[in-house]
Amino acid sequence: MTPTDTAPNALIVDDEADIRELVEITLARMSIQTLAVATLAEARAAFEEGRFDLCLTDMRLPDGDGLDLVSYINERHPHCPVAVITAYGSADTAVSSLKAGAFDFVSKPIDVSGLRSLVSQALKLAGLDHDAPPHPSLDASPRLIGDTPSMQQLRQTIAKLARSQAPVYITGESGTGKELVARMIHAEGPRMSNTFVPVNCGAIPSELMESEFFGYMRGAFTGAMRDTPGLFARADGGTLFLDEVADLPLTMQVKLLRAIQERAIRPVGANDETAVDVRVICATHRDLATEVARGSFREDLYYRLNVIEVHVPPLRERRADIAALTARILEALARKLRLRRAPHLSREALDALEQYSFPGNIRELENILERAVTLSEDAVIERQYLRLSSPLLDTGTGSAASAAPTAPGTVGGYTSNGHPAPMDTSADLESQLEALERERIQAALEACHYNKTKAAKHLGITFRALRYRLAKLGMN
Ligand SMILES: Nc1ncnc2c1ncn2[C@@H]1O[C@H](COP(=O)(O)OP(=O)(O)OP(=O)(O)O)[C@@H](O)[C@H]1O
Image 1: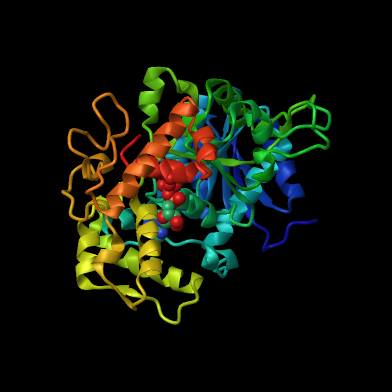
Image 2: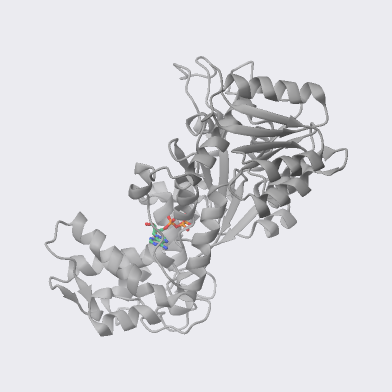
């Protein structure tokens, strides 16, 4: 196809003629007009004269650093995505270019199919800025509720990160909305029409990890009846969300690092690697830097994943959002339960919620409200239906252990030797149930040698549900 006036145009900045040529040919085959220059000065001059939909720049230029061009474009031409071409094996440079605002990088020797997918992503990005109508999936995509300054800032960060391809590391307590943030980064960016694949790293048995992540070939092991794609292949063109990444065993961390660095995977039983184009976003409620210091998380992988860090604050640090979140959750519940009108909370009930510490954050708020709607038959939900285990907590750490009603001589529901306390029969039903729950969970954990995945199975609940309950009961 011959480029037309409406064809997108790209600026290529590299002092090596053969690389310029390779990139020009590849882009021309994609019907993209190109202008190739060899220096930083020429690149700046080109930007003074025209508008580009994409810029690809080498990192080392005769008159300066590619990073300077990245900063210049981000400042003066923020609508133009810029990607850098890095020398083979220079992971550090790739990471610093992403931090400086490059949306992606391609390493030498240039792999043409990788370059093509990078360019397609970039053009989708550029397209998002033009007057294109919003993608239909955006309307259906989840929304982040809340107007406190931290939420407003989080929304701005999401919009910025959606434009980049850099790995993102999301921190925050359980139930704060880390997965929701990851989904929004995916849904607002050029990968929106491809798959978002969430994976709970703590829930995959370690012996199955490699085949789950990378897939397997028929006959690779007993029971491998057909070629089966793994999570990376399913997320090709889209986003892989690694939840609880700190739970990955060290052997898997090495393989993950390789897949991210090489942008290729080798299914179990396959001879060759297959290229994949996956954006990795990960999250954990643990402190990865501490895990690195303890030796349970590889520093090189940490460095690779933690290019950009986003923190999602706990609900108790943004109490002003509780009313809006409650209203939205009650509306959703009304739809789910086919109620004619969404119920709402009495003033007293809302006050109680606004003072509660929410160790399980928004997921806990959802559970409290679902239970209240089920228990209360009125359109106005009174405080007693919230069944808060300790309604009025201080603004401290939010530890559920300090909140839980305890039997005399016990700490957080445990005796001094660490065993669950005997049930206090004078306590109300709620605290009796809580004590029972603790006891059953503790017994399951002990029976399964503290393997949470197995304990959850043993209890007949999901891994997430177990983790939520552990946090709620302060048993972490
Ligand atoms: N700001 C928000 N607005 C609306 N809903 C939210 C918000 N934050 C979280 N939620 C909802 O709260 C629930 C928990 O969120 P999510 O699963 O994203 O938390 P998480 O931090 O990933 O939890 P975990 O650490 O347990 O994996 C989800 O149903 C999510 O849609």
